[in-house]
Length: 471
Image (cartoon, rainbow, N blue to C red; front, side, top):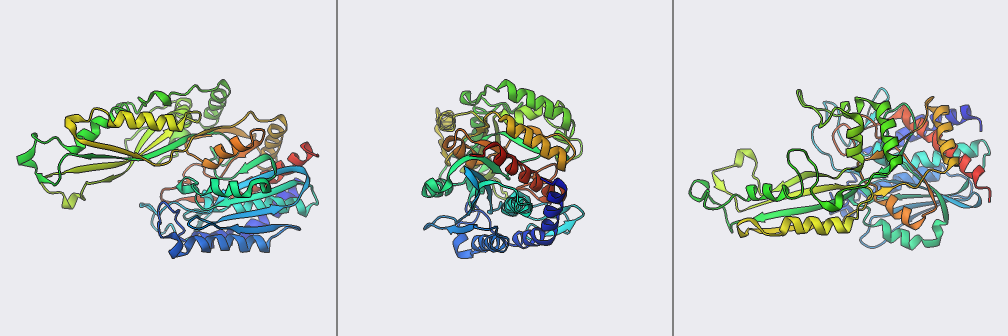
């Protein structure tokens, strides 16, 4: 492999073809189905899929076959097959659906308007992770440009990841043997600790969401007349949350969410913490005077990647401040999001949380916790020596520094599914979501130099995979 030519090929294609297409992609408000129940009527998801498919057709490699899989009531899936040498298959994964707009975008920035500022391309979905299909095919094309061999490749691009990949199991089942004998999975939907080197994700936390509702009256009444005769639904809700979380420390009280962290993961966390230092918490936009829960990077990384945490992401029954009268409200409900340790049993955790929240209702209030389908976490298998060597060589060649390992606090449902389906496969889970990239929030951006280097690294790993698996 001529690594300089790989860099040149990748950089040219990003500048000439990929970036203009991603800008068109950012303009499409194809919010995931959980945030746009009328996604089919709006047609935005179809536009995004067609945009990606047309680019792939224009940049096809010999023998490539592309298909858009569809099923009634389900989001589409882009499936690409690329012939290669040997009997093994590499599966490359990404998604096209997006999170909603959110508020707080900086002046001059907008979720649906691409804006390039120096090395950053701002806009919703560029880094999370609309670039994946373009980078995957470009890495393969870079090998073809030098007549370098690679294994058979399949590219799976779904449109439901931000909603928990609800449609993906159906399509994976339908594809069946068409996926092939997968010995390597490349996922481009993860984080990077910095923009200085290749980062490989070692674990993902699971996610359990649900709605906790508290009802105390059939209608609102005068707060002066009713309090404290009628207990506040909000106060009851506070006591219920204290059953599952220590409000002073944020520590989980759910027994099934107490993980045993493997020694290898602890060692990787310590090494990552040494490299990242204060940037572990310095990357977040704290208000003046605010501080993180700890100033110890290793402790923060441990809790972020292996700890159980609770976030309240929405509320119902609370009027806007300007409309808040002296009323004892009859109802309060909150949307809860539990991040589960990578090895936790999601079903067991769901049952325990529901029991803790609903048992012995204070004052006999009506309490109901309605959970969404829970997603288990994922802990990667041990990295094979060939993949370790390949990632290190690629990172040093294209970034100039050694590759690093780090867990991720978020979830990618597909990884757990693939881990069970292909237990002997190796995983390269990586991505562009580095400091301040802010996926899901305001000012999301794609770091262009890192995108180019990452694409080149994938090409290197694909070539090394073929050399390691010549059968």
